[in-house]
Length: 429
Image (cartoon, rainbow, N blue to C red; front, top):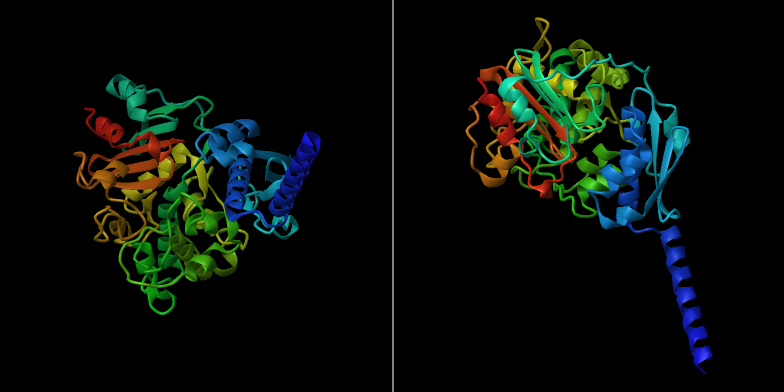
C-alpha cells in the first residue's frame, strides 16, 4: 500500500513538473523574460564594448545586485549573439552586437532582422595611464567612504584639465562605462544640435493632442509612465519587452502635465531629433556631437526598431563623460564653435518647478541625496548634474570651472550618494 502511495505521489510530482516546464517553455511570465532580457543586454554590451569577461559580468553586474531569480540565469555567446535562459532552458533573452551601435535587445528573437544594421567602427584613442592626484585630492580619491562602494571610476577636471583620477579593480581610463540615465542629458544635447542645425522646434507637438518637445524635456508630458524598477513596470517592459520603445511610450494614457520622471519620454525625444535628421539619423550622434567633442569612445545603442535608447544606453570612458560635462560647462561651445543654441544649456540649469530638482532640459539641479532629503549640501548654487542608475553622476560647477565624474555599480540601497565626494573636491584649495 505504501509503495503504491509513493508511486502515485511520484507520478503526480512528475506530471506537475512536466506541466510547469511546458508552461515556462510555451508562455514564460513577463518577469522572467525581463530578467533574461536584461541579462543578455548587460552581458552583450560589457563583453563587446568593454572587453570584460562574460562570467565576471554575469556574477558582478547581473546576479550580485539583482533579483534572486537572476541567480538561475545561464548564457551562451555565439559569434556576436548572446543568449540567456533561466535554468538553461526557459524564457530566452537575446542581444546582438553590431559594430558602431553596440548591442541591441532582440525581443522577438529574429537576429537576422537586426544583425545587418551598423556603422563603421571607430577605434577609441588610447588614453594612457591614469592621472595620479596629489595633495588633498589624493586623500579624497583614496577614501572609500567618499568614492563609494562599487566605484569604477572617478575623474576630476578643472579648467578642462584632468587633475586626478581613481579606478576600481579591473577598470582603467580606456574602459567604456554605461551612463544609464546620464544618457538623457546627452540625448538632450543632440536635441539642441537638431534645433540649431535641422530646424527642430522645442515647441512643436510630438504626441497628440498637445505634448511638445519642451514638455517632454521637462518631464511634464502627462503620459502615465511607471518608472518603478521593482517588477514588470512600464520602464522594464519598455527596455526588455518592447521592440519599438518610443511608440510604446507615446501610446500610454495622457493626463495632467505635472512633473513625473519618465525614461519613456526620453525615447520620444530621441525619435524627434532622429526624424529631423532623416536618413542620416544613425550617424547623427557621431557626426553632430561625439566627433566634434572628440568623444571617440562613445557608443549610443538602439532598440530593435532602430531608435537610439535615449534614456539609458550610452557607453563611454569616464574621461569622455567628463569631456561632455566640460562641453556643458562651456555653454555648448567647443573649440570656439557654438554647437548648441544660445540659452540651451541654460534650460539645463533652470528648474522645471519640481521639488525633486529636475531641470527644463533632461538634467538635475540637485544631487541624488539632495533630491532624497530636500536638504542642500552646500555646493555652489550653479551646480547641476547628470545622474544615472546604480551610482553614475557627472557634476558640473561652472563657478569653479569644475567637473567631477563618478561611475560605478552602486545600487541605491547601498546608501551611497556622491554629494560628499563632490563637496570635498570643491573645497580643495
